[in-house]
Length: 463
Image 1 (cartoon, one colour):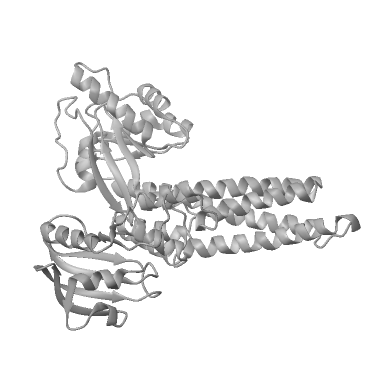
Image 2 (cartoon, rainbow, N blue to C red):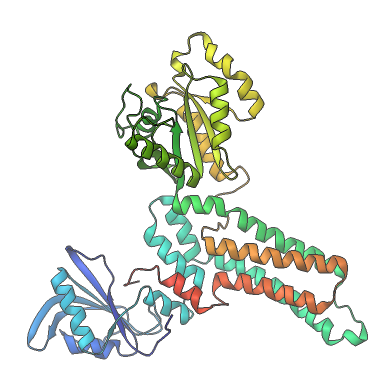
């Protein structure tokens, strides 16, 4: 990824399309000079104080383009830490295009994806995890996702990683100091104390890694498939959860031929509910395609709600279905639907053996009457949050951070083994460096160009 910082960049910072207003950003060493070639107001922008707004007209040649408000930000008190101007224009795509072309004709160039945030990172205003939080905040679609991104933007993750790296750097300094005096056989710190320190650091790393399940669920939502045999009540369940008639419901088996997806918010967590075609031997090509799509969704889901008809199903059939669908990492909930038709509780007695032998409780519900859904929803929520995961602690939501933490833990495990086995300090120092580099990838102290390209390439142009 090109890291050119000597030119001035411009871009539309608001979504494309017709709107009341559109904001164009300009940042770089020539921002004020370029802006003043277009701006006509009471004061030039070059002479304006930082964090002030000027009213004026943008013109190119003899042609007026638009009446605007121009916000001035002088370095280093701007997002990029460079001289910057933001033009608040009328939101006509034609007008905004004219302004951008005029700025480029005056010496600016179009910004690349995420280039404003990239400059903020390269100038030290934010670290890499905070830059990623900017993108997460823009994409937040729930209160929990917003709060998670804000916490990271304010340095929640950065601060924790900085603490870990500081401890490891102190540890590395002691090891390297011993290497300098290796001929004198000097020990600056007792090995048991070093083992305790590495163990404590590993525990913090493990806690951060363990928070990824919750963080990813808050950020991306939980892929939740509703599956079962035809006429089990899957679409009725979707409607009951959403409290609206989202899916067509019929007594005719095989009504649902394709997947239906909706977002369901539960205590700040987004569950992406996916209603699927009934699982059976398909009678025609279209239904066969629907069943195949159902199996694909199940294979990629994080949570599966398997619905069975308590009147029409048998324990043997249910047991075979669950055995075929279960896989490592899948949260599977078994829902006995139409329990309102179970007069005298005979169906429950029939399935009691399976309930006890599998160790997986059956949720007895009636989708038609929306009964039993409160207990189900709380269990679904708890499967994501976990009892031992406080919502107010630092939470990891980024896969790149999670993988870096796992790499750091692997290196620290090698350090611990070296201490226990009395290996040489040289090898131990290399393992400590591996852990430091892995943690440095999170905050950006270690920044390969391919990492920067991957992170900022996903940003919108004007951010």
